[in-house]
Length: 193
Image 1 (cartoon, rainbow, N blue to C red):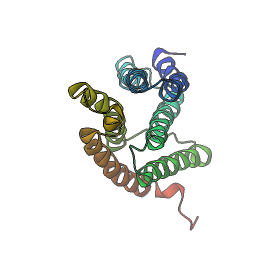
Image 2 (cartoon, one colour):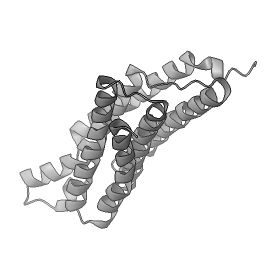
Image 3 (cartoon, rainbow, N blue to C red):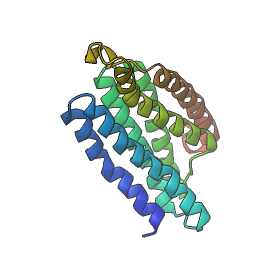
């Protein structure tokens, strides 16, 4: 197994650690440790892709597992942040629905045509924006608490204006990239076949 694929597997294995940090540690440690684990896991996404292209180690396994690992990480973060009241449920539903649609099309393409569909640039931009948004949603409340420590700790718990802007951008990219993906790969789900 090559290094890029090992990094992708590492990203998947870091998800339970992220969940434990977010749910078991008290605020602000939950946010800080969770953000650190999430940030490292997210960084492996950029590193594994760079290494795979640079060393000509792009594999079908990597094309399959890399986007799946991204989805698992981002969906986990979305669900946890929604649990903490930082993400509207509709946003979580839109993002998860798009991810399920894309994954379903990929599975159909692989099983019926033997084709592995790699992520496009808009899908990658969506993933990066989602990762930045979720990271900011975790870290911003802690930063604002440090700025005004005399205020109630919980008053900052859900305050993340920059993260919210990135979240809106991520939702828009999710919708647009989902439509683009559906149109480009319609041949695999055309009901007339």
